[in-house]
Image 1 (cartoon, rainbow, N blue to C red):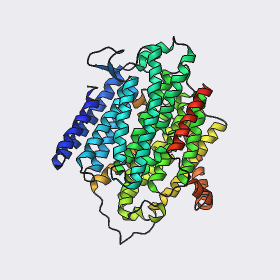
Image 2 (image 1 turned 120 degrees about the vertical axis):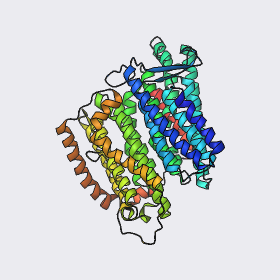
Image 3 (image 1 turned 180 degrees about the vertical axis):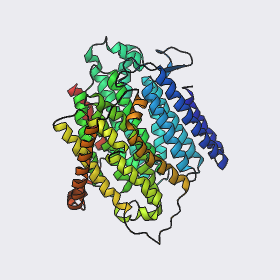
Image 4 (image 1 turned 30 degrees about the horizontal axis):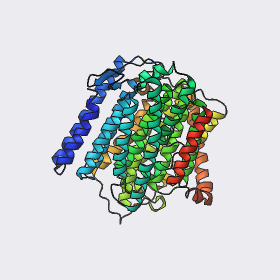
Length: 536
């Protein structure tokens, strides 16, 4: 059954490529996606029943559903394993691609688009299920090619440039990863992540420094942490990318890299840098929202906020607390929901208004009430408004954090609030009678459902964390009230900061011009690699 999640989307993509001129085939694709979602839920319940987790699901002694492709053993064969954590992301992948399929049902009718979409789904599911270093390399290479073609899909001049930058940067960093796993194989004689982990206990620590630095350079670029971030807004926010693709890139695709970060940090636990990545996560979160504040393009604002939110997630993973770790896991799920909502709604808004320029868009609430409501719910989610999903995950991330670190987290939250006060100005304004509004219900319904999930995953947050991660989590009423009061104080402060400091700030206009080209990104990769070697 596990192999089904990798092969079936690929075979479905081939079928749609050959027959997608018929609308009936896209109906079949929709039904098939529903079937994949149901199967993923069954996989999750089965894996949860078999998995013995520690209080964080930190992978120690994990068991789960395992299949060996071709009947070979775990050392020589291709092994797929579904434990509690990977099964959660399989469900999330199935759900997000179902949403993307519904949204794209009438928007994209080309056979190539549907083939690429389902091939992409198969590779992502493979990344969450594989337990082999080399399989990760193959799946990442395939997904890189698929995403590059999707970025180039409309063949606009800017899209061509951004797509090629994305491709070349990934080709460079994949060589780091390939050399890294070469060293792993040399020292352990296996490419199995779990078997190699057992061997690492017997290998001299000094031997692991170089492969760790090589592999983490690859992972950090894929996660878009500072300073290896510049490729992300080019790929996620470029004008030629279909909105469903942007939503999947920011909401789901980047989570596979964060997932790999967790796997490799555990695998290389002997040399893993905790404090280094804590500082890097904080810097990424802060610089990410500063870059977002400088933008006026809807998609670029959202793309830079993806960088900021990934920084927050990595910060939580490296704070060292049980609840902080758990909060980051839940924030990965929440971010997929509210960021996908924002990207899909931004696509509709840009199409109706004929522009992505923030200050040229007004009155979304009155012109498109359902789209405006979904956008507002997602804004509540990403800013951490009380009772919404982001507030629960941010509460757990900040739990047990004291002193200067707690105020740094408040500052991160304030930056997000200010940025989305700016973004939310598109919702207000009078109804435009000259605006031609032709938006399919098949596009409005999925974003409204995602918006509702921002609310549902907030009020049921405590129960969902226990269900998803097999770990009991409790919200302290007084602690949550305190965090809520801090939020409302930040909201008031954020409004005044936006009105009197941020709006039309000349410094931010200069920050907006910061854009690393291919040469600068390659230099940043080298600098980061050297930094990891130095600190290890």
